[in-house]
Image (cartoon, rainbow, N blue to C red; front, side, top):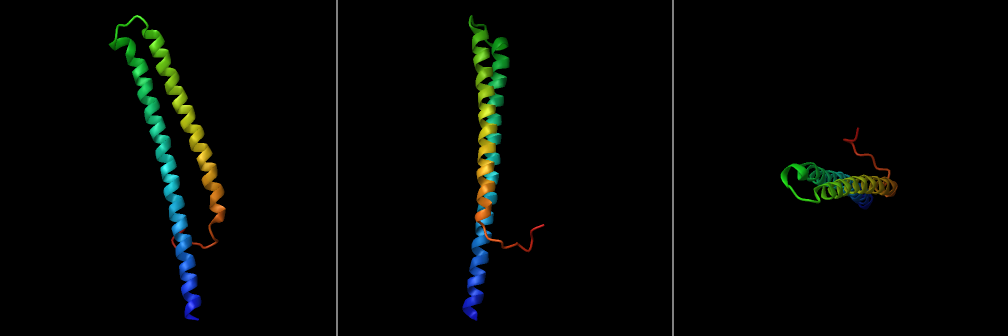
Length: 104
């Protein structure tokens, strides 16, 4: 009987670890999205200020290139976030049916 109790505790511990790992993965995915957003904003601000700060002949071309890089980074970051979010939600089915007592 003692071995049955130990096995059930181990199983619950493993399921809890998997759930916590999944939560860390969700947070890492959100952090990655915010990093793409931050980088996109840097390029956007650089594109906005390039005309006022530098007086170069091809400033408009450089400004458009920076705007395009900003848009590409933003779009790639959002698609990356959505793609990984789907993969994370599909991997939730592999965790057992154990309900945490603190879960709402």
